Length: 299
Figure 1 (tube, rainbow, N blue to C red):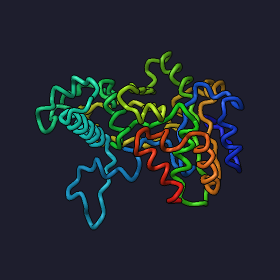
Figure 2 (tube, rainbow, N blue to C red):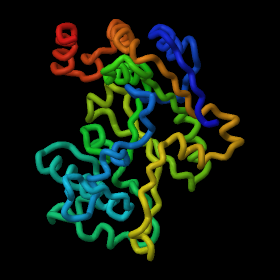
Figure 3 (cartoon, one colour):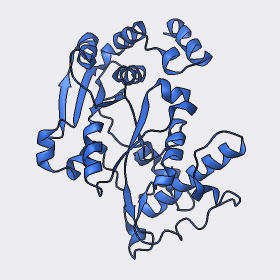
């Protein structure tokens, strides 16, 4: 099995497991979930975002949003969102990554040549768009990237902060990104990518020690049945379970999922703040400091 599961009953035991002097988690990256049921699924591929790429009109029928599930429209919608983010950021004088393919079409309202220029099978997201996608993802644009942190305590803080009930468990996913990256480098057709944008232009990302993972989607817009291909919404752990050979999974510990009762979330957050992991650290600047100060009075 690609995932090892560990459950802790107390915040202390949970945090002790994540300490480097208790467990060697070198090469792992971390992601916190306020509910253990949440899957390792990028934001744009979640069920509540399916309406974004809907190409049907009217978009609301019988009082409900229609939901698209076709890769043809999904990829083009994602491209349009990224292009608009890039264009508006550039127009307002914000620093954007160098992406010549995007710049070629910034003068027009729409890039009508995107799908037409895709001859043969291409990777989505293409390499020239990855850095722009990471920037957009960090500021709230739903994309196919999945965000992680090098720091387990930052992931624990995000998990604890999102809990709003005592029932169920919160979770932290520990992912052996170093091992999978090495495997990907040795197997050039393996579709896994780690995206590490420069920290110098993004203080929040630097403070959060953030990075992103991505599984490339192969797609040919001109294939006869391209318009009928469904979006693959398989979570990262299940996808890697299918992609990695069984002997490699036996040799390497790919995922460790650790859980804690949500009733312990308040204690977990308190201990993390005492250890220096509050909003003032995760969101550098006055806003993070003000939020941390007010957290004592808004509880």
